[in-house]
Length: 292
Image 1 (cartoon, helix red, strand yellow):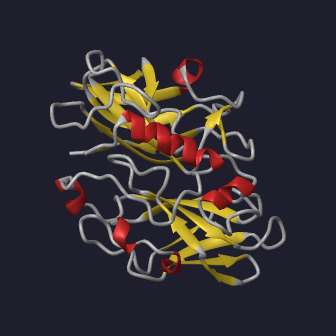
Image 2 (cartoon, rainbow, N blue to C red):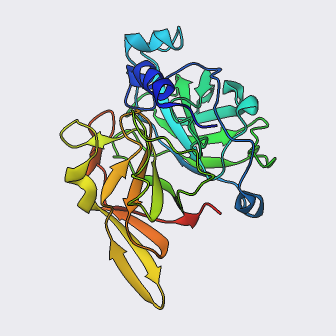
Image 3 (spheres, rainbow, N blue to C red):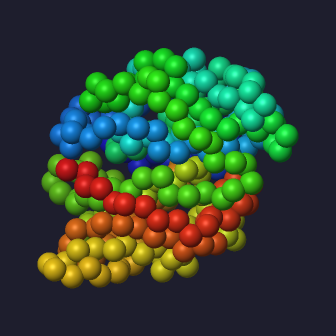
């Protein structure tokens, strides 16, 4: 069952230690449904992005979540399939720098992106070299990191998005709000308006984002999100009438659509969002997959 709004507000207060991805507890109580979409059983899991988000810059208050977090590096990884929380540990990850130094990750956390449909982002906390002379260039999975469908990421690796680059889209999926959906009406991180929304496109960024002005993404940024959608034999471009799943300090944003159809791709215009270092996003585009 999805967390209540009250619980989500408490989580939001906790994870405000950083807009990166929060640096929350390393062994959180993950709230997840018991069911797993059948489509995930047919797709091959892979690492989508690794983002060098903060270099020796996690704030002192992050120690409330992990006692050694202050001044460490932060690197969010996004995966194609939701993860089995019981299999996540820092020793599952190995980071290599441009000079060939190899680091085992000190700590790993799913928080704050631990809501329904969001268990695909892990924040790595530790020391992974320094920008610009010896920054991290790759991450490898060296332990049994499992998906909720029982598939193993062990052995996979990916290049790291450099520190100076801005955030990009890592993953996008669409779904409907039906009677089975764990709908949350009010509070931080709550959902699209049920009566007005035909489809939801969930956009997952490479790391935590906010608007260029430093505030939460909202109505001023809606037109920068363009969804290409199949309607019969035609392809049309639509923009969301509202953004949802906000103010919870994670890397997931819901786009609320009034149109029926099949979303096939999502584009976000450049200079729409910034990461924790205030780096602006480039124009970024990604395929939209079905949740079903």
